[in-house]
Length: 389
Length: 173
Image (cartoon, rainbow over all chains, first blue to last red; front, side, top):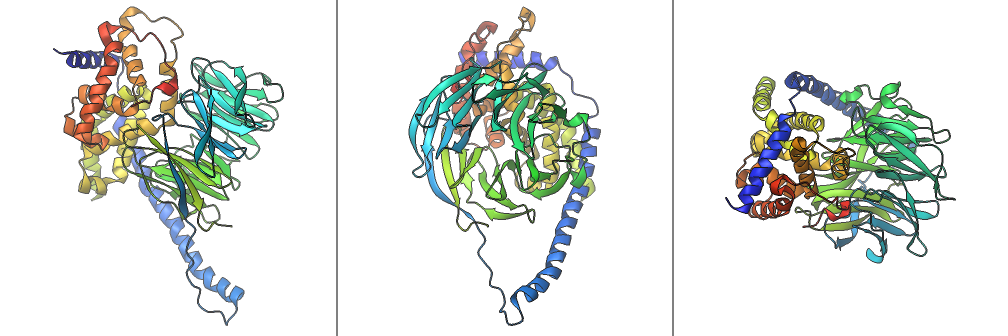
């Protein structure tokens, strides 16, 4: 038996042993059937909404046209819809290590392996490489309060503070393992920290670079943290999952499953378990092939917009932008959803590869796609060819 | 039509659900999540039934969906954090081998991990592995060989990985 065969046999044996410790939960098929029974209802609901929208548009449009344009107006000419065009397309060196990016202070900031890259949005070239030895694949990054902040999920857990004027790390704030998500809002830097059992959110005062106030206990496996509608929304990813809501003034937390907030199966969707973005008075998230719009007051899904392979959604320029993709070797793209109509209003050019991250800046959207082998990645800058107002 | 889709999916579920859960478990190291991903794969198969029937075999579709879900799931990121993290308490020797293999797998980039699990845990052929991953047979061979190369020192004599690398160092080719 050669070395490869021996390694493969050891792998198989060890995995068999590990699997043998678990049993499949009983009733898997009945549970699946229950889920599937919701599908026709969901389709019917979406179809009904579309039909009502089309019917309403058919009735209202001629009326509006008549009233706005007057009787002498000619027939309207079709206007080319706004669309995204590629402003730049840059190969990122260093393999598949770029997973988080943000914009701010006139730059795009990208987490690399042990470094943070500063990219000039005008040229899409890296203009500074800032050593931050323990940032990596799991690190979140955010800008605000006069600095760039990067969570370090590595062996030295904490947060790097970078001065965007000098491109240097000015402070490293130690935190308990393992910090993941980060955002700046309400005068504080908010960091989610994964622990055994319920996780915590830590607040950092940017004036002192010190932890401010006691840790806020949230759900299991807190990941992304989003600010919107006067609340911080934490996506919990393990255990009973769900979303925790933090009152930024008091630090009081309400878990979605513990109160009235939360999905109700409306439009056939399951309970909301993550929040990606906030905008237009709503929260936005994805669930497989739909982008969901959520009422922050009730947690109810108010719209489910079909977007195949929607992966993540952000809010920018008055629209919700969904990053889509079919891994490992399919096509991905970005589409814009108009909150006024809850319909896809902007289409982007397709990319071959796996979507990894998306952010927005003043000049447009920035998307990272990996190639099929995850050995290289492309930073793509998308701008609106004719932007919605 | 609806009844035939239901019956077809029921048969697939009976035959492939355990395999898909094992696959998801090997990729994520989390049994509950693996069951969830297995179920989700069937929901997606239900939605895409026409496409599956026309274009590709259902098992390949299901495996590809599980791999995709495991990769894109944000939960996966956190499971990897846990896998990388040093265990808080020492484990007894008799159970040390299995968690170590999950840690060793978690160190591999996703593509290599999927290749090695499909080939050597699910015993798929190179062609079936390629179909599940949407890559060429040649790529399966090279990725699998490299994965085994990386796993060899980690699995030698059941020894535990001794150091936790920085997360950012995981993604190299």
